[in-house]
Length: 375
Image (cartoon, helix red, strand yellow):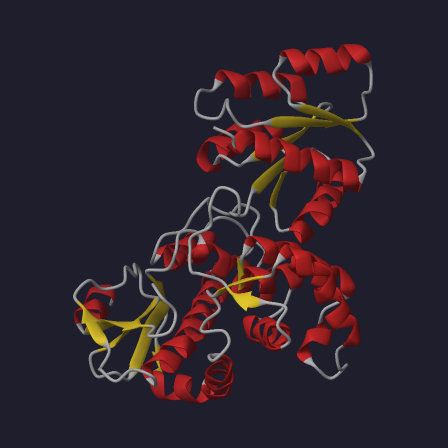
């Protein structure tokens, strides 16, 4: 079935005439009646991952371990691998998820297609779909996405796509909050709470995509974009120049290794709203393999754990040439001078005593990430 479908399919590129550097890609049957998949192509590094991190939670899928990056077309294979990685996804749920992702991308294909003077460009290299799990009627998809296409057509004057980067002048952050407080309650911007608009302000200082801002607030990209348009119309937010996330602005991955689910959840609750990606591991014996595979930006490590304590795990990390440079901070209930000295001798960069204060954790993470990014 796979080979026969691929032999009767065609892949088309739709270059966005407004969003510089963005191409949407769609794979359909040669008679254009069936859609096999659609995705974004030729976007900046890191943006494929931001798209999935926004959309998957909206579709009810939580991912514990994200890859560092996703290249063009790897979103399909990533979902396929999730089907066999644990109990979260089965074949049926996985296919439904791929269809939703394809439908979201297909919507933007239609928006771009209606603005193009030339026919879509056929790509001789087909999207890598192995196996092919999605086969949807193009006619039905046209009807299902009709309203969403209309919304994005209206948004295009301000925000070309959910990959658009928006920014705010740091000196106008207080104005941003003032505008939110005085805005008409019927405006989409009031779907945000004060804490969310404050977090948006910090992300907008860096320059963030609509996908990233939507994920931070738990909103659909269309709803987030409508809220952002209100801020743009008021002059508080502007469209930034397209550029890839740099070392300073890219989403940092924080790995918390603690056998306590409560502590891990607390760390995630503190750091995730600030735009960090938090991965929690309860089993220290599996930590080395994860660290080697994904190489997070920072490790928060508990000391007292069964089978393998934090000191021993830290020593193993420091002896591994692949991951020895990852900064480590201890989270522990042990506050003795000897414990702190032992941690320092192992190369631990910081030492925080439980219960962790949010302000202390924020400062620690920010400082260690800044130090690790210095040449």
